[in-house]
Image (cartoon, rainbow, N blue to C red; front, side):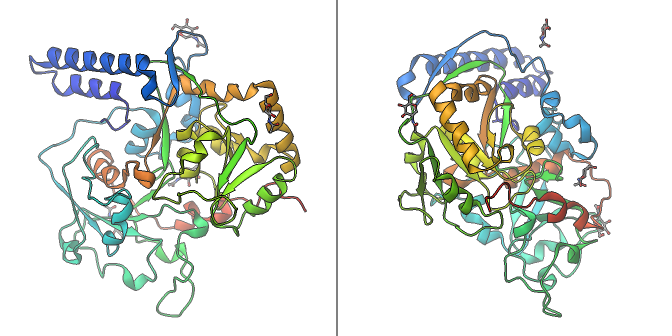
Length: 438
Ligand SMILES: *[C@@H]1O[C@H](CO)[C@@H](O)[C@H](O)[C@H]1NC(C)=O
Ligand SMILES: *[C@@H]1O[C@H](CO)[C@@H](O)[C@H](O)[C@H]1NC(C)=O
Ligand SMILES: *[C@@H]1O[C@H](CO)[C@@H](O)[C@H](O)[C@H]1NC(C)=O
Ligand SMILES: *[C@@H]1O[C@H](CO)[C@@H](O)[C@H](O)[C@H]1NC(C)=O
């Protein structure tokens, strides 16, 4: 699989790397034929799928507008890393030096991260470079590798004090990178303390230490979003499987007390429209919470993709898996609308930010149901493909792949985050609760 995760791109890379060889034409023809065959199976063998796909030709084509334009990323494109541009702007990767091998040291918490990043919530180890555009990297957890490692990954969420960091840089050109999958509110686990004076650890304590960032943000040096959408090369019309119409909304929620008061919003919403609540905060039971999928959620037209904090760019498996993957329409609570517009295709979600409160949101949902206008929220699926990349529910985790790709593709000019609080701060990236009733 290619870095963009769509097979067409693989052909392009295939053509590129075998340009000098006579076999190039053969490879391309065979690959194309295989793809056409796979597409034929997909089209005709509909019983294998949980929805029907019909190839169509029509107007409203996103391929005309480039990937750059629909995201409007050109506005702040300058600080997006080369890897970010490949992932989000569809740029082509450079040819890599295959002979070069990079050593990745996952500092201290490598074994703790295995469940998700190596095992993907299965009980076996999965090669993290298996579906990666590059594989010339070794991962090590050994402290002694600090002397030789090309890149050192420091997992901030688990880091409890500055004293936990490696004592010193093993090589002058060694790239120290902080990793966090959480929003700025939850970067550190609650009980993290600075060992010296007992003060709570803050992001600014790490100023001048890190060269690269690794987070869900698209302007990270190593972006690791929970999911992405990519423009399809071939448009395929999406037709939804009928969903329940008696109860329209579902949510799975296990943390009932969050900074953005999402559960208060849900309780208020329930006064105006029925919403089925699965998990600890509700009465309905279903597997879920990272390891096992909850298939019951597939039956609902709408899913409340309410994040635990309202921070720009922080869009998790609650949207990518529980809504998009299941072809439910996400009702989002998280970042600003401006930010969602940049990250998600047009008309692919409903944002609570756009409503005066739960009552008007409920009214809107009931109307979408009655008029069948909810179908407008499927149109984007003709042009976009959804990729889940978080490792939950046995989806593929790409963290180590992305590190290796960044080592191969990114600029290695000297870079130091001297003022982390300027780029990783909840005052700048997060918002108070949206439209919570008094
Ligand atoms: C899309 O591209 C075609 C052919 O290049 C062009 O005729 C058409 O006007 C374009 N449509 C839009 C919306 O840009
Ligand atoms: C949704 O619309 C269908 C079809 O009109 C209707 O039968 C159903 O009662 C509606 N559901 C709700 C919750 O209003
Ligand atoms: C990484 O950061 C350190 C500490 O500020 C700095 O001395 C070093 O030059 C940086 N290295 C790179 C490759 O940017
Ligand atoms: C990238 O630029 C934007 C806009 O200038 C800024 O808000 C953001 O913090 C920058 N990102 C990084 C990682 O420096």
